Length: 322
Image 1 (cartoon, rainbow, N blue to C red):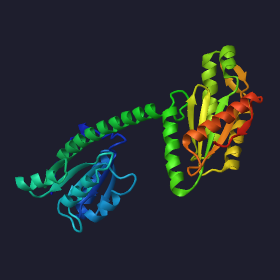
Image 2 (cartoon, helix red, strand yellow):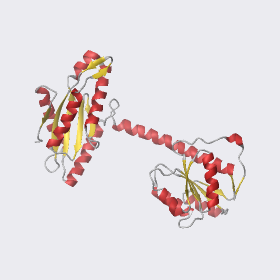
Image 3 (tube, helix red, strand yellow):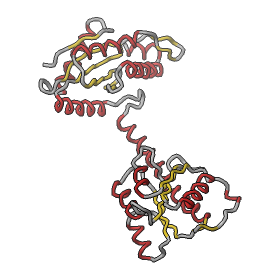
């Protein structure tokens, strides 16, 4: 069934993160054992399945293998049907399928490729041929991994503020709208907090814009630490931030804003060799879909924020929309 020895000069594989896990689905116990031995000697992490049904269960897991070696003829679920299931699911990231078969008729091979296999090996096959074909799959999966990373970087650039790492203005407003729709469906309310770093222009004028940037970065970090894990923090513009707190009433949103305020004044920010004391003013409002709109709540929080600034800063003021 298996033949050939591998020259020692080939060395070990160094699979990348997208393709270091291999699933072997094969009902022959000896064949599984041999394949596991080879693959592990090449540096792969190997998972084995004795039939197609067990292989399908493994593929439902969060960290499912990306390289699949599937035998054509298996009990419960054969390799062809398993290929079809994998492709119908259209999962991401892509899973590379190497179909192993004793069939050598061209029509059978065409059936395998049409079912979703990327490549095939006819039994008996050579150890070095298997390794070469796995390298082909590895190159494809590595390229995919790089593309996914680029896509994620672009997504982050499109939705996050480049300086503070919080959501940007467009994204935080989109998220507010999403929470508004959820609140309308479930009859809940949303807390809205507008925050402004007090006397930020003075920070820039006194310590320089680089120090000002460091103050904003630290202010955003403290905000994110002070809110609940599912609250949303976004940079609304300049030194102004917006916090969206789902499932929150008037008292809870004021408590949240007060936690942020205390986190700011707790200790100065060290920037450019200077110790810079910072405080924030905050305005809060409640967005209740049956009573008001997103625009109403934002306007109310903004009104409350400017009242806090007029009345001496470093405080939390609430305002009812409308």
